[in-house]
Length: 468
Image 1 (cartoon, rainbow, N blue to C red):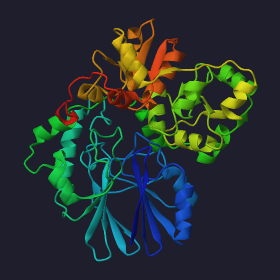
Image 2 (image 1 turned 60 degrees about the vertical axis):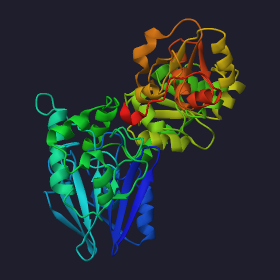
Image 3 (image 1 turned 120 degrees about the vertical axis):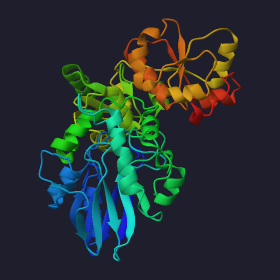
Image 4 (image 1 turned 180 degrees about the vertical axis):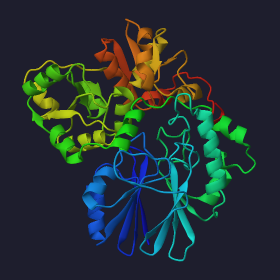
């Protein structure tokens, strides 16, 4: 038996590859099928099953493409109703894979079709669970994504989740390995651990949601408390996972078309495409296409695109570092953004050589920012999450979280003002959005809050985020 976790950090997502005696099961695959096909070929094996723990909201799974390529059936748990052919497993249904067995444990709560897959080894011993979004390390899946108007509330779903954990997962042995679908950074939970694998016994000891003496009412209150609104693109991803999607090859062919500066400008004007600049924030600040939006590849790229652009059908045009065009299109497709129309051939340097107009972002060092503060009151906007801001912030700074920036546009002044985040990535996104909205008086603080602290700028007293 060979079990491999295939973890994608930028999505905080775990897919799983299980092989036994030449037969393979893949759980919650990413959209692009080729890496799994390559792995199967190396093992001289065959994909027998494609298991889905639920209809994912935060990414487009690769089940449809992988089934098309391999002929393997897709397996969902009870209550699933996809638009394509699939095995809808019954609770406790067993699936033989080589010498091992995979058991479908229906664990509703995150969604009503959510299913945990229990792996039993060659001797019939419980070895591991693939818990999807039912159980994370340090947390559980949020119960507010599958509400139905007039039918189910977040409290109803949390109640189902409580029963699923107590009746299906907690009775398992402490040495059972927990393989979750997500880790720290995912919007599918609140406070996940940075680790991606653990034992169930350790989770019973330290995961707040698995306290042995916890009542159902306590569980519901704690699970719901502090949930931020889900990103706007989540329902669209659920729809794609439920109904199907274009082949990744077609998306790549369309998205990696080379466009000269003139053609790039013409397509942008004709289609209303958003120009997405995915270079490093420092490079973007020094020069970029006017009204382009910065969301760098070397950060939480795809989730931020989904959170800020929201409409997955929005046409996009790319400006990348040379050689990273396909990577950008692929990562966009993982969250359902399939309408990339091409990229700027030769990158931003080609734009400048064509004598096109360009813009810059005014930036200031933390040291210079400190001197400016000492000279008098300044407008400072902190685009970190509310919890980060409450933990510690520049005195008198305004909290305008990046994922809700549009709600705060009326509060930005006409006079020059400063923006910062933790390290510089999010604040440059914010600066690009503000400039696209006509706020050309924005000044980004290089290095963010970390650099500001290092310069000794006065900040609020520290409050541990876990006590907020």
